[in-house]
Amino acid sequence: MDAALKEPAAGDVTSVMADIGARAKRAAQMLANATPEAKTKALNAMAVAIRAHEQDILSANAQDMAEAEGKRRPSAFLDRLKLTPERIEGMARGVEEIAALDDPVGDVIASWERPNGLRIERVRTPLGVIGIIYESRPNVTADAGALCLKSGNAVILRGGSESKHSARAIHACLAQGLRAAGLPEDAIQIVPTADRAAVGELLTGLNGTVDVIVPRGGKSLVGRVQTEARVPVFAHLEGICHLYVHAPADLEMAREIVVNAKMRRTGICGAAECLLVDRACADTHLKPLVEALIDAGCEVRGDTETQKADTRVVAADADDWGKEFLDAVIAVQVVDGLDAALAHIAQYGSSHTESIITDDEAAAAEFLARVNSAIVLHNASTQFADGGEFGMGAEIGIATGKMHARGPVGVEQLTSFKYVVRGTGQTRGG
Image (cartoon, rainbow, N blue to C red; front, side, top):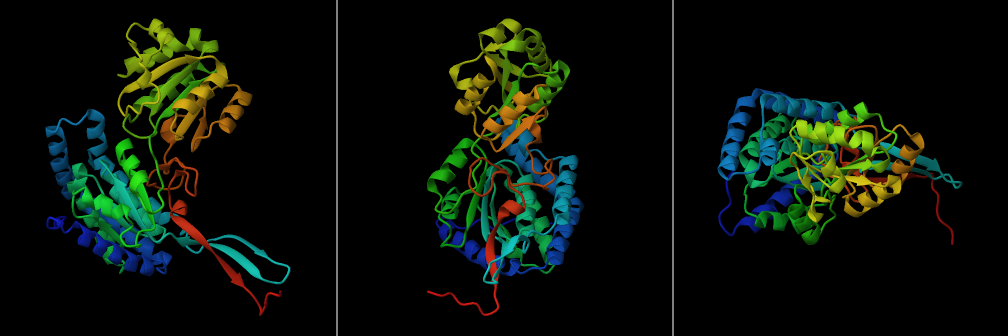
């Protein structure tokens, strides 16, 4: 399988990107009227192609890994970049799960009849052309391409230079699926250059052809997108997720949740970055929780009380509160009750995901009501902050803003709506 894309000549990025945008716009117009059966056929064919070309994808990923290791990228970065047969199978299954979802396009969200006899429906429609800018995770190529297709949108994918070989190999499988279903290959395009100027062009909206930008990456990338974008943005700035162990909390359950929330995958946006322990249970819970984290291979940076609980704890500095470590590191602080925990989260959180661990239902209800993050949990790991775990299929990312899409961005969040009004000859009087 040839996944190579021609790199545009120097100085030609503007015209190349404009052409990509124009082709995406034409493809979006065709997709808006594509049948659910055609989209499902394409998605299932993509999954077949991903499995069939596993070795091509692994070979491409090996090139990316070698380059990243040569640049001495941190272990968490390498984990996000690395593909294995199991992760490739997970990609294929994810595409199949998206194929099995109900098609959102044309879904009647609400309907009512006016006293004058007009019948009004609010109906889901595709957004149009979506630009997705992401960094090291090559699996985003499959997730994003599949989600956009299912929701009737064309997509322009701009992956990071670190994952370019992997992304192109995966994209070739998506194109194969589109061809198998007779859908336009321009429905899923990948930017053929690592030139940063291509991102700037995409953020301009490509002459009005791009309707929404979705950034998925680090703080500097998302910050640039929010500053420069001339089209709407579904933003996910950082995953500064908190765990609050409130008294009373079952110690064994707290221990399992805390270790899982931090250590299952340290490099994902749903990984816990800060543990808050209620002073009312610090005498019984703090030391065991800290020990469990350290024994699992996590560096703990704590306040004075946390340092007293275990001599292996490193003193936290001011920058450790509100920091997205994306590594086996966590900040731990003892807080004076629920109000103090809520104040800490409000000051240092990123509106992504927060969890309370407690047997006190009233305290849990207050926490869930007052924390203004996209996802709030009770007695569950923050690592559940994932569209697949919500039963929504794969997701492009977790939107932390407050407009339109919030939380996991899946097929429904990639649609808008229009009003369909049916009459029997009604006219409006003066």
